Length: 415
Image 1 (cartoon, rainbow, N blue to C red):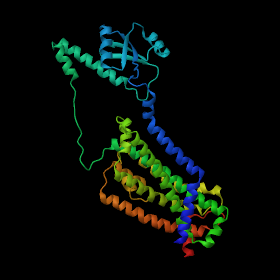
Image 2 (image 1 turned 45 degrees about the horizontal axis):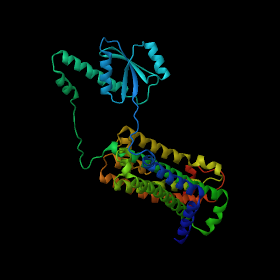
Image 3 (image 1 turned 90 degrees about the vertical axis):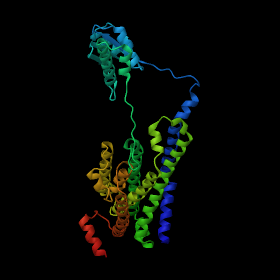
Image 4 (image 1 turned 135 degrees about the vertical axis):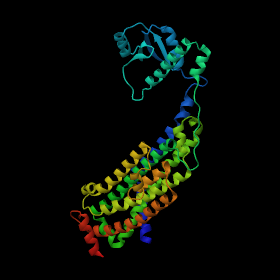
């Protein structure tokens, strides 16, 4: 046990003293502080009691429907407050040139009460003008028809202004996927980066020691399992420390500037996540990291040169990346409880992300969570023992890395 603690402290100190580790941590902490302080800074440097000028989008209106063009422009401008419609008698070709030159942001040629041409220079990815203008034009058409049928103007306006109000009441055990999506996305991406990054750090550390022959000296004074577990736990604590520092500082900066994010629902959703979700994040980070770190460490002990490392750990990396894509696709589709996700929730290599997402955004029974965590914990110990055996075998193994079948045969014969 003493050997384990010695190696554990040595590995953790190596990460803590590493300039790259410290620089990345400091930069991310500072970046989170700056980003979360931007609203406060803007308030401090902007003139007080002076509202920011609002510029309306200017759209040319050519009315060919034999209606009062100026009345139509006034109606559209009133119905769309951020837009100003200016009447013009230019033809379509001239309007195209005017829009292309920037004289107007766009142009509308109203050909009939229910048909128009919209001239634009660029069609934005999230352009909503068509939907807005269609609704306004349809309301205008219906209002005029109702007046023609003899309905008083005030009743027409009241009828067109009528709207539906509703509220959604959620049961106590349900999930709001829209609200939970943002913090789940950030946390799952953080889990992905941390597990992948620190797992590969373990593999690189083991491969470096072997290629430099330092491992041969270490193995004479320390048991292989102490070396393996010391490295993995040391790297795990370093990763968890960095994780806590970055997210902890972000939470601190958010609370310092909380009053400036009152209307930003996304930011509030991220920093007001339930405490159980945060605890599950830490749990799945730790267990997921150990699973992959043990595998990476074992595979790192099989290579003789650093150049061989990437090819050797590629299968494990691909499994992890595939699990990440399955989880992200399920999240964006809104169906996080599909059959594939349920299966992945109980496979140790995929459950750290799959089960976490189902807990945050889906419907999962308590026994499923307990079973998934139990399988994951047992798998950590089983894979750890198996990785230590491979590590012990691979310490003095040089040359081409053995195939899986050869490796199992060697492990059997070494017992």
